[in-house]
Amino acid sequence: MNITADTRSTRIAVFIDFDNVEIGVKNTIGGPFDIGLVLEAIKERGEIVTKVAYSDWKRAGDYSRVLAQHAIRMVQRTVTPGGDKNGADITMALDALELAFTHDHINTFVIVGGDSDFISLVEKLKQYGRTVLVVGGRQFTSTTMQKNCHEFIAYENLAGTRGAGRQPGRGARPAAKMTPIAAALPLVHRALKVLSDREVTPQLGLLKSTLLQLDSTFSEREYGAGSFRDFMEKVAEAGAVTLRHAGRNILVEPREHGVLVAEPHEHGVLVAEPRENGTLAVEPQPPRAPDVGTDEDAVPVSPMTMQDGIRAVLKAFGEAAAPPRWPLYVRQAKQFLRAAIEGFDERNYGFASVVDLLRAAGKEGVLRVERDRHGAIRVFPGARLTPAPVVEPVAEAPPVEAPAVEPAEPPAPADEPKRPARRTRTKAVKSAKPRARKTVRTKEAAPNTGE
Image (cartoon, rainbow, N blue to C red; front, side, top):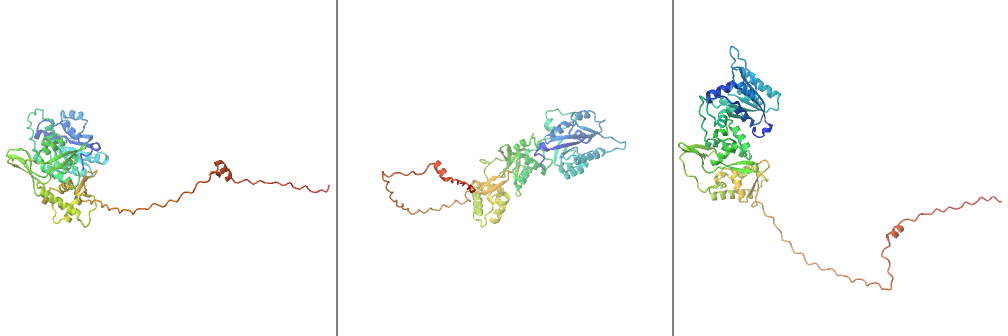
């Protein structure tokens, strides 16, 4: 589920286990719990339609006033003499399920708290097709909760980004050190490979949702980035990807070749190198001089190997007994090449993926590579595969003799009167009308009376 695709259609319900999160922040991070930071982070993901917090508000002090300013409905948790450790948890779970049953327009639930008892609620909401986000601390939130929700928002990242200029309170721990960007390269590489296998264009929003699907604990703020775009710009500076603007969208293209050098490390530099299985290995290595004269658009290392691959593609498609039905998608093109070339492997020609091979063949005119309106790559025959139309010579027609022209009749003598060529229209019309028959009445003979 893409939780970042359209924030206008995301309706969010927030449920806060206040006692749990307030004590967790106080004991692990230090300082008071700031509900404003949490709500601002949630608003970035959609529209909040309801906010409910559970606690014994008689002991909450000034927190009740702060929550009232944020229009949070506070449910009183009544503490019995025998103690009710799970009283607020049960009430919160029942209210969340009731809201899921009665309000279909609410499609996202946010649980603020770190108790592992809520894992059953998380799984049940996911079964009903709801997106579940968990807000808590990395140190006091259950690992099971962090790994099984759609997205985990670490309170440490929120407090570190917004409260960078504040003085830490008494007993507050220093801010956690930012994670080097090289630690995120294997996850980014894996997400790009997933999108490539799906034949989907890796845009920024789609890439982040894929990263969250692979690791719900991912957050760009952990790497010192204020937004996901800033994070990907750091990844591009590390040499792992190339960002390309396509209208209003930003496309991410992986750079599979070479060594990806990231941030400095105490033992040298953190280096991410491709493994044989396609993943990246991030290990500290001594610094080495970067390659000189590299080009972002250069596909293979050896131009001879590139030409061999292009010739193999040309032979496979050009000499096929049964030509394919164009256009082909990447997966179909790969299957065709495997069937046409024995032991086909694009890596033998110096290419990291079939897409790189197809693009190189497109530059040479063997193929024509385009994207459809959904962003998927399609392959068409290029100029070198399309045979030129055969123009048959036109036979010259035999000369045609001009027909003999008969002499015209001599003109009529001058003294002969000319007959009119045609009558006037009035006379012609009149002559065309039939004559009316006249009825002739005869006088009856008078009777002969003899007088």
